[in-house]
Length: 151
Image (tube, rainbow, N blue to C red; front, side, top):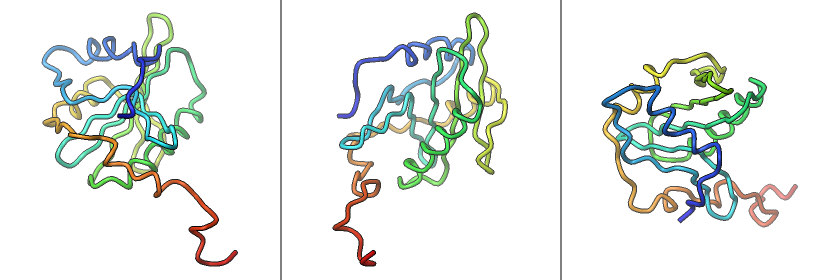
């Protein structure tokens, strides 16, 4: 499976759960997942019946455009999966302060709140028997042998 040793950023997960408050459903979360063969990493993925929740953790301030670009790229990879919605968030911790951002429908990064994120965690989680089977690396890998246009 594409799970690996927990990096520093993912260690912020307990703080995020605390910020969202009690009674937050944190089951069925996949931390530090990498798509096999292409090593595309996601800090947190959570699946419900119709939605994929992606949360990226930052342990230091990052320029907003870099966060936005990462979430857009993540959304591209996740859009190939059989779910109707993708919710993309970034949780940034700078010392004692924390900031939450989300990617809106226009792919623009906007400020969010733990309460808004908690609404996505409140959806009933759906465990994946083998998360690697959801991702087909052939959809993302480019090969000159796949080019039928003869460019």
